[in-house]
Image (tube, rainbow over all chains, first blue to last red):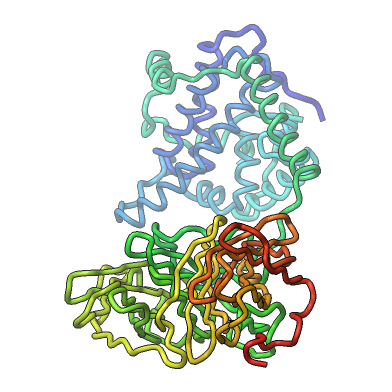
Length: 171
Length: 395
């Protein structure tokens, strides 16, 4: 497996990195959490923390990987709070900001187990290499490969189609 | 779906997402938190502190003092009254001093003791246990009146009383006419914080029970006397009228021949009762009655007869001895010496002298002197009295 240098912005400023990465981070968190509010808050918070520590984060092997780790942690806590608030305050569920013309794909993604959903999103949407995904998720790289394989098969089954992935850009 | 990546990215409807925060908004968010990155110096100091603390704890665990042996927790939930001095520090026996207190300006001394619960101690002027068992926390007491009368109580066993109640165990009067001491021995429940005797004449005595026990005394207070008290919850115990009965047996207040204090602080009261010399002797921590010796008039002017008594106050940790002496009419001064070199002397009254000394040292000699100070008779006290246990005038 090769590594993708796309998320290694040596010498880049935070602003450049932020402009190129924010949308990916936000999209990924929306797909993972299924909650637009939580995703926006987590993405903003993760980027703010990256800005605070940019001197240290910028020289990491994967600044984006670090930011995703922070974003996922923030999102996990925010989701927990949101669930409690929804129960206590009886707040109505806010529909996720996904396109309405492809509901079957969203349903398929949503039905993936969390581990598989995170792996798929980080790999295909956030453009992280399998090594970086493994680092973000705190598991072995081989586990990510197997997880991605299972997730693809599951998505294909859900969509009744064979998912032909183009691994060239990632592997 | 040929391209999963494209499909997933296109899944998000950007029109329903807010615009990304600007750089200023991000900076404002970071500014609110005042993030301070790790500094090597702070990291070093933190690590050093942790190492020191862990090392200290480890050293304390490995080399620290062993835990002290578990001391049985006292079930005594009472507290000493401020006016109750500490127990006799010299008392190393199993005979435990519960409390010692004085009333009426120190003229009446109350000494209370706990029995060991294993071996009984009474009578206390004997050395060695007496095979009579008393329940644990039983109380013995002796009280000395201003004129040296010593009233002794046998052991009282504790009783069952309600937590906020008090029971008068015994109430009696003793002492010389004009100096009558009314004593009440009281056992109270665990919630009683204070007991008090209040006489009709307005005299009162109060103490905090110790081990449930309290001994209260009032002097020269004819009329009704009430027992009252307070509990830890601020309540009052039921008031009780206390009636004091005279002491039974040998009247303690039989007319004294003399009351004297030796140079080392022993209070001696000498008297006569039905042909016997009676003695009441007490010091700070102990007091007792001696039966004395048979009394008779010594007709020979220079005659001398002394019988060493046994030690008293041994279990209280404050031993003493007293020697009654009968002398003839020609003797003006009697002196007794002890093995430790000390001596006590007095002019006999009615042919009787009682000499005393604090400590365990045995008496050695009794010496009779005439009015000129010349020795007229000497008796060795380290051997049995010549002629047996009766004085010459009774043989």
